[in-house]
Image (cartoon, rainbow over the protein chains, first blue to last red):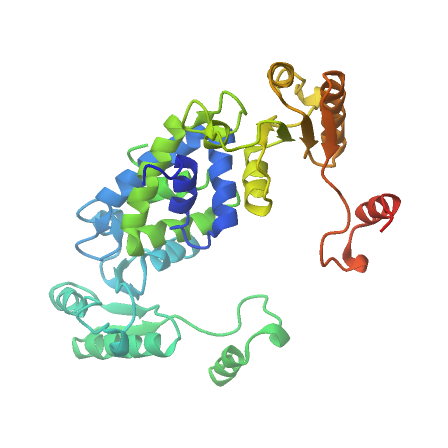
Length: 198
Length: 198
Protein backbone atom coordinates (compact mmCIF):
# COMPACT_ATOMS: atom_id res chain seq x y z
CA UNK A 1 0.00 0.00 0.00
CA UNK A 2 3.00 2.29 0.47
CA UNK A 3 2.92 3.50 -3.15
CA UNK A 4 -0.67 4.78 -2.75
CA UNK A 5 -0.56 8.40 -1.50
CA UNK A 6 -1.59 8.68 2.15
CA UNK A 7 -4.37 11.10 1.16
CA UNK A 8 -5.87 8.49 -1.17
CA UNK A 9 -5.54 5.85 1.55
CA UNK A 10 -7.46 8.15 3.90
CA UNK A 11 -10.22 8.72 1.33
CA UNK A 12 -10.51 4.95 0.79
CA UNK A 13 -10.56 4.24 4.53
CA UNK A 14 -13.35 6.79 5.15
CA UNK A 15 -15.57 4.80 2.80
CA UNK A 16 -16.04 2.14 5.48
CA UNK A 17 -18.53 4.57 7.06
CA UNK A 18 -22.16 4.05 5.99
CA UNK A 19 -23.52 6.52 3.44
CA UNK A 20 -20.05 7.78 2.50
CA UNK A 21 -19.19 7.54 -1.20
CA UNK A 22 -16.11 8.78 -3.05
CA UNK A 23 -17.22 12.45 -3.11
CA UNK A 24 -18.14 12.64 0.58
CA UNK A 25 -14.98 10.79 1.56
CA UNK A 26 -12.86 13.26 -0.41
CA UNK A 27 -14.66 16.19 1.19
CA UNK A 28 -14.19 14.70 4.66
CA UNK A 29 -10.49 14.03 4.12
CA UNK A 30 -9.78 17.58 2.93
CA UNK A 31 -11.90 19.10 5.66
CA UNK A 32 -10.03 17.25 8.39
CA UNK A 33 -6.59 17.96 6.90
CA UNK A 34 -7.18 21.60 6.08
CA UNK A 35 -9.46 22.75 8.86
CA UNK A 36 -9.71 20.35 11.77
CA UNK A 37 -6.58 18.30 12.43
CA UNK A 38 -7.28 18.33 16.16
CA UNK A 39 -10.73 16.78 15.56
CA UNK A 40 -9.17 14.22 13.23
CA UNK A 41 -6.52 13.30 15.78
CA UNK A 42 -9.15 12.85 18.46
CA UNK A 43 -11.40 10.79 16.14
CA UNK A 44 -8.47 8.49 15.31
CA UNK A 45 -7.73 7.94 19.02
CA UNK A 46 -11.33 7.37 20.09
CA UNK A 47 -12.07 5.13 17.11
CA UNK A 48 -9.02 2.94 17.74
CA UNK A 49 -9.94 2.69 21.40
CA UNK A 50 -13.63 1.98 20.70
CA UNK A 51 -12.90 -0.75 18.15
CA UNK A 52 -10.57 -2.50 20.62
CA UNK A 53 -12.47 -2.04 23.84
CA UNK A 54 -16.22 -1.93 23.15
CA UNK A 55 -17.89 -5.32 23.49
CA UNK A 56 -21.29 -6.58 24.56
CA UNK A 57 -22.79 -6.23 28.04
CA UNK A 58 -22.83 -9.65 29.69
CA UNK A 59 -26.36 -9.05 30.98
CA UNK A 60 -28.29 -7.19 28.29
CA UNK A 61 -25.98 -7.64 25.22
CA UNK A 62 -25.90 -3.94 24.35
CA UNK A 63 -22.61 -2.30 23.30
CA UNK A 64 -20.38 -1.16 26.17
CA UNK A 65 -16.70 -1.00 27.07
CA UNK A 66 -17.45 -2.48 30.50
CA UNK A 67 -18.34 -6.04 31.57
CA UNK A 68 -21.83 -4.80 32.52
CA UNK A 69 -23.32 -1.69 30.90
CA UNK A 70 -24.26 1.45 32.83
CA UNK A 71 -27.98 0.72 32.73
CA UNK A 72 -27.65 -2.85 34.02
CA UNK A 73 -25.20 -1.70 36.69
CA UNK A 74 -27.49 1.08 37.90
CA UNK A 75 -29.24 -0.03 41.13
CA UNK A 76 -31.92 2.67 40.60
CA UNK A 77 -33.40 0.91 37.56
CA UNK A 78 -36.57 -1.12 37.99
CA UNK A 79 -35.57 -4.78 37.67
CA UNK A 80 -39.17 -6.00 37.35
CA UNK A 81 -39.66 -4.63 33.81
CA UNK A 82 -37.60 -5.83 30.85
CA UNK A 83 -37.85 -4.23 27.41
CA UNK A 84 -36.74 -6.50 24.53
CA UNK A 85 -35.31 -4.65 21.52
CA UNK A 86 -33.48 -5.62 18.35
CA UNK A 87 -30.43 -3.34 18.42
CA UNK A 88 -28.32 -1.17 20.73
CA UNK A 89 -29.55 1.89 18.78
CA UNK A 90 -33.08 1.05 19.94
CA UNK A 91 -31.93 1.28 23.57
CA UNK A 92 -30.49 4.71 22.89
CA UNK A 93 -33.66 5.90 21.13
CA UNK A 94 -35.94 4.67 23.93
CA UNK A 95 -33.71 6.16 26.63
CA UNK A 96 -33.79 9.54 24.92
CA UNK A 97 -37.51 9.57 24.16
CA UNK A 98 -39.19 7.85 27.09
CA UNK A 99 -39.01 7.92 30.86
CA UNK A 100 -38.63 4.13 30.99
CA UNK A 101 -36.80 3.14 34.15
CA UNK A 102 -36.62 -0.64 33.69
CA UNK A 103 -33.92 -2.70 32.00
CA UNK A 104 -33.34 -3.83 28.42
CA UNK A 105 -32.42 -6.98 26.58
CA UNK A 106 -30.82 -6.57 23.15
CA UNK A 107 -31.42 -9.45 20.75
CA UNK A 108 -28.97 -8.16 18.16
CA UNK A 109 -31.27 -8.86 15.21
CA UNK A 110 -34.48 -10.75 14.46
CA UNK A 111 -35.36 -14.34 13.73
CA UNK A 112 -34.60 -15.08 10.11
CA UNK A 113 -33.93 -18.78 9.51
CA UNK A 114 -33.12 -18.23 5.82
CA UNK A 115 -30.24 -15.94 6.84
CA UNK A 116 -29.09 -18.37 9.49
CA UNK A 117 -30.39 -16.29 12.41
CA UNK A 118 -32.13 -18.59 14.89
CA UNK A 119 -32.93 -18.32 18.62
CA UNK A 120 -29.31 -19.16 19.46
CA UNK A 121 -27.89 -16.16 17.61
CA UNK A 122 -30.34 -13.84 19.36
CA UNK A 123 -29.43 -14.98 22.88
CA UNK A 124 -32.87 -16.48 23.58
CA UNK A 125 -31.35 -18.97 26.05
CA UNK A 126 -29.77 -16.11 27.99
CA UNK A 127 -33.12 -14.28 27.94
CA UNK A 128 -34.89 -17.40 29.22
CA UNK A 129 -32.44 -17.71 32.12
CA UNK A 130 -32.97 -14.10 32.95
CA UNK A 131 -36.76 -14.43 32.96
CA UNK A 132 -36.50 -17.61 35.04
CA UNK A 133 -33.97 -16.55 37.63
CA UNK A 134 -34.95 -12.97 38.27
CA UNK A 135 -37.87 -10.95 39.44
CA UNK A 136 -39.07 -9.84 35.96
CA UNK A 137 -42.85 -9.27 36.07
CA UNK A 138 -43.41 -7.56 32.70
CA UNK A 139 -41.74 -8.05 29.34
CA UNK A 140 -42.21 -5.18 26.88
CA UNK A 141 -41.76 -6.13 23.22
CA UNK A 142 -40.27 -3.34 21.11
CA UNK A 143 -39.18 -5.26 18.01
CA UNK A 144 -39.98 -3.91 14.54
CA UNK A 145 -43.19 -4.68 12.67
CA UNK A 146 -41.50 -6.50 9.80
CA UNK A 147 -42.41 -10.15 9.27
CA UNK A 148 -39.19 -11.24 11.02
CA UNK A 149 -39.75 -8.72 13.83
CA UNK A 150 -43.28 -10.05 14.39
CA UNK A 151 -42.01 -13.63 14.43
CA UNK A 152 -39.35 -12.65 16.96
CA UNK A 153 -41.93 -10.89 19.13
CA UNK A 154 -44.16 -13.96 18.95
CA UNK A 155 -41.28 -16.23 20.01
CA UNK A 156 -40.36 -14.01 22.98
CA UNK A 157 -44.03 -13.60 23.98
CA UNK A 158 -44.55 -17.38 24.04
CA UNK A 159 -41.45 -17.91 26.13
CA UNK A 160 -42.18 -15.09 28.58
CA UNK A 161 -45.84 -16.15 28.89
CA UNK A 162 -44.86 -19.74 29.68
CA UNK A 163 -42.58 -18.45 32.44
CA UNK A 164 -45.40 -16.45 34.00
CA UNK A 165 -44.40 -12.93 32.93
CA UNK A 166 -46.93 -10.38 31.71
CA UNK A 167 -46.16 -9.52 28.05
CA UNK A 168 -46.92 -6.13 26.46
CA UNK A 169 -46.10 -4.65 23.10
CA UNK A 170 -45.44 -0.99 22.26
CA UNK A 171 -48.27 0.64 20.29
CA UNK A 172 -48.09 0.91 16.51
CA UNK A 173 -50.25 3.37 14.60
CA UNK A 174 -50.34 6.82 13.02
CA UNK A 175 -47.36 8.93 14.23
CA UNK A 176 -48.21 12.00 16.34
CA UNK A 177 -48.98 14.95 14.06
CA UNK A 178 -49.10 12.62 11.05
CA UNK A 179 -51.55 13.65 8.33
CA UNK A 180 -53.62 10.60 7.37
CA UNK A 181 -53.11 11.19 3.66
CA UNK A 182 -49.33 10.88 4.02
CA UNK A 183 -49.32 7.79 6.26
CA UNK A 184 -48.55 4.52 4.45
CA UNK A 185 -51.55 2.25 3.95
CA UNK A 186 -50.17 -0.60 6.08
CA UNK A 187 -49.81 1.66 9.10
CA UNK A 188 -53.22 3.22 8.50
CA UNK A 189 -54.96 -0.16 8.20
CA UNK A 190 -53.19 -1.31 11.38
CA UNK A 191 -54.19 1.84 13.26
CA UNK A 192 -57.80 1.56 12.07
CA UNK A 193 -58.13 -2.09 13.06
CA UNK A 194 -56.46 -1.36 16.41
CA UNK A 195 -58.81 1.50 17.38
CA UNK A 196 -59.86 1.62 21.03
CA UNK A 197 -62.69 3.17 23.00
CA UNK A 198 -62.02 6.64 24.44
CA UNK B 1 -13.98 12.53 29.80
CA UNK B 2 -13.64 9.09 31.37
CA UNK B 3 -17.16 9.10 32.79
CA UNK B 4 -18.66 9.59 29.30
CA UNK B 5 -19.27 6.14 27.72
CA UNK B 6 -16.77 5.36 24.99
CA UNK B 7 -19.62 4.88 22.52
CA UNK B 8 -20.83 8.43 23.18
CA UNK B 9 -17.28 9.73 22.85
CA UNK B 10 -17.06 8.02 19.46
CA UNK B 11 -20.36 9.56 18.32
CA UNK B 12 -19.17 13.01 19.42
CA UNK B 13 -15.77 12.55 17.73
CA UNK B 14 -17.38 11.53 14.42
CA UNK B 15 -19.14 14.89 14.29
CA UNK B 16 -15.87 16.60 13.37
CA UNK B 17 -16.55 15.25 9.85
CA UNK B 18 -18.39 17.68 7.55
CA UNK B 19 -22.09 16.96 7.00
CA UNK B 20 -22.28 14.56 9.95
CA UNK B 21 -24.92 15.41 12.56
CA UNK B 22 -25.97 13.45 15.67
CA UNK B 23 -28.09 10.90 13.76
CA UNK B 24 -25.47 10.14 11.10
CA UNK B 25 -22.73 9.96 13.73
CA UNK B 26 -24.77 7.44 15.74
CA UNK B 27 -25.42 5.37 12.65
CA UNK B 28 -21.73 5.43 11.71
CA UNK B 29 -20.61 4.43 15.21
CA UNK B 30 -22.99 1.47 15.38
CA UNK B 31 -22.18 0.39 11.85
CA UNK B 32 -18.44 0.30 12.54
CA UNK B 33 -18.82 -1.48 15.90
CA UNK B 34 -21.38 -4.03 14.78
CA UNK B 35 -20.41 -4.72 11.20
CA UNK B 36 -17.00 -3.39 10.25
CA UNK B 37 -14.45 -3.33 13.06
CA UNK B 38 -11.65 -4.06 10.61
CA UNK B 39 -12.59 -1.01 8.54
CA UNK B 40 -12.77 1.06 11.71
CA UNK B 41 -9.36 -0.10 12.86
CA UNK B 42 -7.85 0.73 9.49
CA UNK B 43 -9.55 4.16 9.40
CA UNK B 44 -8.18 4.98 12.86
CA UNK B 45 -4.64 4.05 11.79
CA UNK B 46 -4.71 5.88 8.46
CA UNK B 47 -6.37 8.96 9.97
CA UNK B 48 -3.81 9.21 12.78
CA UNK B 49 -1.00 8.80 10.28
CA UNK B 50 -2.51 11.29 7.80
CA UNK B 51 -3.07 13.99 10.42
CA UNK B 52 0.53 13.69 11.59
CA UNK B 53 2.34 13.26 8.31
CA UNK B 54 0.45 15.08 5.54
CA UNK B 55 1.73 18.59 4.94
CA UNK B 56 2.06 20.89 1.95
CA UNK B 57 4.26 20.28 -1.10
CA UNK B 58 7.20 22.69 -0.97
CA UNK B 59 6.82 23.44 -4.69
CA UNK B 60 3.08 23.54 -5.47
CA UNK B 61 1.56 23.76 -1.95
CA UNK B 62 -0.86 20.86 -2.46
CA UNK B 63 -1.38 18.28 0.31
CA UNK B 64 1.18 15.48 0.41
CA UNK B 65 3.07 13.39 2.93
CA UNK B 66 6.33 13.98 1.03
CA UNK B 67 8.56 17.06 0.75
CA UNK B 68 7.60 17.35 -2.94
CA UNK B 69 4.32 15.88 -4.23
CA UNK B 70 4.13 13.12 -6.83
CA UNK B 71 3.13 15.49 -9.63
CA UNK B 72 5.97 17.96 -8.99
CA UNK B 73 8.45 15.09 -8.61
CA UNK B 74 7.38 13.44 -11.88
CA UNK B 75 9.96 14.24 -14.61
CA UNK B 76 7.39 13.37 -17.31
CA UNK B 77 5.20 16.42 -16.54
CA UNK B 78 5.47 19.43 -18.82
CA UNK B 79 7.23 22.13 -16.78
CA UNK B 80 6.34 24.90 -19.26
CA UNK B 81 2.63 25.02 -18.31
CA UNK B 82 1.45 25.93 -14.80
CA UNK B 83 -2.20 25.70 -13.76
CA UNK B 84 -3.14 27.93 -10.80
CA UNK B 85 -6.00 26.59 -8.63
CA UNK B 86 -7.52 27.48 -5.29
CA UNK B 87 -7.52 24.14 -3.45
CA UNK B 88 -5.94 20.69 -3.46
CA UNK B 89 -9.36 19.25 -4.37
CA UNK B 90 -9.20 21.24 -7.63
CA UNK B 91 -5.94 19.47 -8.52
CA UNK B 92 -7.62 16.12 -7.95
CA UNK B 93 -10.67 17.09 -10.04
CA UNK B 94 -8.56 18.36 -12.94
CA UNK B 95 -6.29 15.30 -12.84
CA UNK B 96 -9.29 12.99 -13.02
CA UNK B 97 -11.16 14.91 -15.73
CA UNK B 98 -8.52 16.26 -18.06
CA UNK B 99 -5.43 15.02 -19.80
CA UNK B 100 -3.41 17.99 -18.49
CA UNK B 101 0.24 17.09 -18.28
CA UNK B 102 1.69 20.31 -16.84
CA UNK B 103 2.16 21.29 -13.21
CA UNK B 104 -0.06 23.00 -10.66
CA UNK B 105 0.22 25.77 -8.11
CA UNK B 106 -2.27 25.68 -5.22
CA UNK B 107 -3.08 29.07 -3.70
CA UNK B 108 -4.99 27.60 -0.76
CA UNK B 109 -7.86 30.11 -1.00
CA UNK B 110 -8.67 33.37 -2.76
CA UNK B 111 -7.86 37.03 -2.16
CA UNK B 112 -10.25 38.35 0.48
CA UNK B 113 -8.78 41.32 2.36
CA UNK B 114 -11.78 41.54 4.73
CA UNK B 115 -11.05 37.99 5.94
CA UNK B 116 -7.35 38.74 6.24
CA UNK B 117 -6.40 36.75 3.15
CA UNK B 118 -3.86 38.76 1.14
CA UNK B 119 -1.19 37.83 -1.44
CA UNK B 120 1.08 36.62 1.38
CA UNK B 121 -1.36 33.98 2.60
CA UNK B 122 -1.81 32.66 -0.93
CA UNK B 123 1.91 32.18 -1.58
CA UNK B 124 2.04 34.81 -4.35
CA UNK B 125 5.72 35.49 -3.63
CA UNK B 126 6.50 31.80 -4.08
CA UNK B 127 4.49 31.82 -7.32
CA UNK B 128 6.41 34.89 -8.56
CA UNK B 129 9.74 33.17 -7.87
CA UNK B 130 8.56 30.14 -9.71
CA UNK B 131 7.47 32.17 -12.75
CA UNK B 132 10.74 34.12 -12.70
CA UNK B 133 13.21 31.33 -12.17
CA UNK B 134 11.76 28.56 -14.30
CA UNK B 135 10.79 27.86 -17.84
CA UNK B 136 7.02 28.50 -17.42
CA UNK B 137 5.58 29.71 -20.74
CA UNK B 138 1.85 29.52 -20.02
CA UNK B 139 -0.13 30.14 -16.84
CA UNK B 140 -3.65 28.65 -16.83
CA UNK B 141 -6.05 30.31 -14.38
CA UNK B 142 -8.60 27.88 -12.89
CA UNK B 143 -9.87 29.92 -9.92
CA UNK B 144 -13.62 30.14 -9.27
CA UNK B 145 -15.87 32.80 -10.77
CA UNK B 146 -16.80 34.39 -7.45
CA UNK B 147 -15.82 38.04 -6.90
CA UNK B 148 -12.81 36.96 -4.83
CA UNK B 149 -11.89 34.27 -7.35
CA UNK B 150 -11.97 36.83 -10.17
CA UNK B 151 -9.84 39.27 -8.16
CA UNK B 152 -7.36 36.49 -7.49
CA UNK B 153 -7.27 35.56 -11.17
CA UNK B 154 -6.71 39.23 -12.08
CA UNK B 155 -3.81 39.49 -9.58
CA UNK B 156 -2.12 36.34 -10.91
CA UNK B 157 -2.73 37.39 -14.53
CA UNK B 158 -1.06 40.79 -13.94
CA UNK B 159 1.94 39.20 -12.26
CA UNK B 160 2.35 36.47 -14.86
CA UNK B 161 1.90 38.94 -17.74
CA UNK B 162 4.54 41.29 -16.33
CA UNK B 163 6.97 38.35 -16.14
CA UNK B 164 6.38 37.51 -19.81
CA UNK B 165 4.19 34.41 -19.45
CA UNK B 166 1.16 33.78 -21.65
CA UNK B 167 -1.97 33.77 -19.45
CA UNK B 168 -5.11 31.72 -20.22
CA UNK B 169 -8.30 31.08 -18.30
CA UNK B 170 -10.47 27.94 -18.36
CA UNK B 171 -13.79 28.45 -20.19
CA UNK B 172 -16.95 29.24 -18.24
CA UNK B 173 -20.39 28.70 -19.75
CA UNK B 174 -23.30 26.31 -20.03
CA UNK B 175 -22.30 22.83 -18.74
CA UNK B 176 -22.28 20.00 -21.30
CA UNK B 177 -25.78 18.53 -21.63
CA UNK B 178 -27.19 21.44 -19.61
CA UNK B 179 -30.73 22.47 -20.57
CA UNK B 180 -30.79 26.25 -20.99
CA UNK B 181 -33.94 26.62 -18.88
CA UNK B 182 -32.23 25.09 -15.86
CA UNK B 183 -28.94 27.01 -16.12
CA UNK B 184 -28.70 29.95 -13.70
CA UNK B 185 -29.02 33.37 -15.32
CA UNK B 186 -25.49 34.50 -14.44
CA UNK B 187 -23.94 31.54 -16.24
CA UNK B 188 -26.30 31.98 -19.19
CA UNK B 189 -25.54 35.70 -19.57
CA UNK B 190 -21.82 34.92 -19.34
CA UNK B 191 -22.10 32.16 -21.95
CA UNK B 192 -24.13 34.39 -24.28
CA UNK B 193 -21.72 37.32 -24.03
CA UNK B 194 -18.78 34.97 -24.51
CA UNK B 195 -20.09 33.35 -27.70
CA UNK B 196 -17.52 32.64 -30.41
CA UNK B 197 -17.56 32.04 -34.15
CA UNK B 198 -17.78 28.41 -35.25
